[in-house]
Image (tube, rainbow, N blue to C red):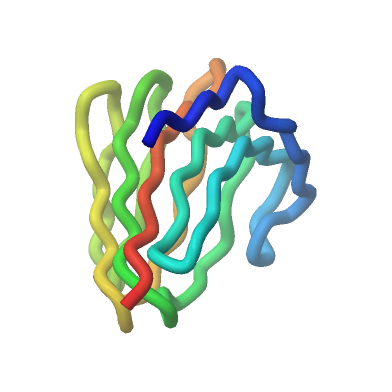
Length: 109
């Protein structure tokens, strides 16, 4: 199956999961999960939340940031992957001056 993110509508979220600033996302969803390309503007964050439906896999395409997963800080840079398993809590924030671009797969279980 081909997912063409160029043809997907971009949605903008303010204060996602209680975070701050603006996050934009293009998303594909079906019963197996979600595939998302998102952009966190400089200073924006996705607030602390628990993964209740499945594993959350976030590959950093570009930019810099940090994640907090079950209390452990992780530095995010291009080419690294942040993994938050079902039942764990995490947040992500853009600590740089450019957009933090993530390719995310949520595996529903």
